[in-house]
Amino acid sequence: MKFKQTNRGIYQKWWTPYAFIFPAFLVVLFIIFIPLIFEFMIALFDIRLQNIRLLRDVGINIFSFPKIMKNQFLGFGNYAEILKDKLFYRTFLRTVIWTFTNVFFHVVIGVWLAILLNRKLPGKSVFRVLLILPWAMPQYIAAITWKGMFNYEFGAVNLILNKLGIEKINWLGDPTYTLMAAIITNIWLGVPFMMMVALGGLQSIPSDLYESADIDGASSWQKFKNITIPMLKPVMVPAIILGTVWTFNMLNIIYIMKDGLPGDDVNILITKMYRDGFDLYRYGYAAALSVIIFIILTLFSIAYLKANQNEE
Amino acid sequence: MRKSDYFERTDSKIKILFIYITLIIMSLLAIYPVLNILSSSLRPSNQLFSTSLKIIPENASLMNFKTAIFKKPLVRWILNSMIVSFISMFISIVFSATSAYAFSRYKFLGKKSGMIILLVTQMFPAAMLLLPLNILLTNMGLSEKLWALTIPYISSSVPFSIWLLKGYFDTIPTSIEESAYVDGASVLTTFYKIVLPLSKPALAVASIFCFMNSWSEYIVARVLIHDERLYTLPLGLVTLQGQYNTEWGVYSACAILTSIPVMIIFSYLSKYLIGGLTIGSIKE
Figure: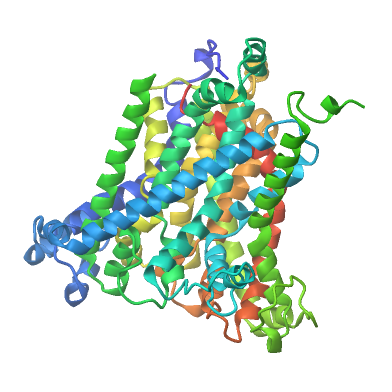
């Protein structure tokens, strides 16, 4: 809906809107932008368990940081180390597979369910409430619960597979299967968001578009391709970008699922960052990895937005 | 009664049947994990390692719930989480409602970039800024403090709430506010007395989002809080997670007690959500 701007200049001073947005932006500045700058700085230094105590002398004045840490200055050494490591590329590839599979199923299943729910259908509000439940479940509970369901011996997944005559799978012992289990869990978690976004988008499509298509004798597939998809796009593009970023950085699920499994075979970039930073205390290295993740995500978002603009 | 009173005119009977079957299967998949923990929470401890798929187990008992409430610090965890969640919810809503109002009603320099900055902040989820944030908060003496935990939570829920609320404010006609101005009301009074009461549904949705955001956050809390007395619900529950050991039933009972109330509120509010998510698009 377009908001009509009426002449209300006399009721507002020039600073009124800024006063309104000030508190929120102050928080965002302090909690997001200052740490972000700090992170860029840490990434240039060799900070690890041995010299972590120096960080305390920095206090909150992050600009004193380069002076205190000057002996640890590495330049782009952390980045070089990451980019030379084969493990990085393997992890990156795994992250791409993880993100793509998740977002793909989120969107496909979400849009599909939204289309089914966006029609006259007795009882559809009950289905909507049931289908949205995974969204309401706290992520860590979902992760632990699914982990229980993937248990080799007593987990529901293997018991059901067994009933269907399929051999039990060692979900949590084999890295490939652990990743699959994590993907299944995360698909389960993420579908409701996309479904609700798509449902909102579908409801804003004027029904006369479909009616005139009916008069022209269009098939359901034609209507879907020529009306539904183009009309859903403006709503879905931001949701897909957000969904991709969220999934790319989904720490909870993999972290909890792989708990107890040694090695790097299940890590995606963000869980590797967490392990390097908070388990191995390689702060500089982990910060550089965060910056790389940040650059990857920014490039992706710009490219995706550009690609969608050009088509219009 | 004609079929078309209930169903789409163009849908055949087979198609309707197919739609229902799909929806039933998908709904079962959606709720099965909830039923699964419900089932383990009702299992007496000698039946924990059972290979039965029944939802209500034989000899179902509420023993695990009793243990959870009286023998585990569940109540303390809930209280800690409540403190954190309510503080961050309240502050987030105040901050985002005012901002959203400015974005909805005023034209000003930096409006569009402001909205985009908010979207961009979603690019760095807490997990990525964890490292510098942890150092800064620790250096400020704010680790191991419950209220300090609200700071990252507020910042992570504010951008989304602003988008949601701006979308809703956009749908409220300005004519009411204008007549208030004519009667001599100030900008703040108009906002407080007219716009906010009209936006109750959107405020409710945004509040529940902020609340749930903190109620279920695990990673940031794990880094900032180590004192067991200050554990929030997620930290506490994860300590119980040991897989299929004796605590599994107790964990399940706790998980049920934690998530069911949230799910009920969430389902109730979900109808307001559909509109809110779309209108919050970046277009003016």
